[in-house]
Image (tube, rainbow, N blue to C red):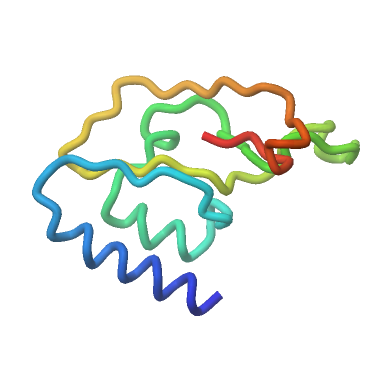
Length: 107
């Protein structure tokens, strides 16, 4: 975990010097209240939090767990935007998880 935190911090150091608008998108394997997400959200806009609806849950894509109502229960995939990037709308369209999707609903 320490290596992932250091990588996130190094990436943010590099992004601070970027002059053009940018997006950081992907599977962070970090839950919403987690430290790695906070590293990015402290300086970047979380598109789902800014303009999304619902919780934006992405993992697992499909489950047999009745406690999660058979759907995703954790958000680990994100779209972060630089402050000079403006999100007008954020919507999530998902397809059922397949064997090739790694069991998640990616962004």
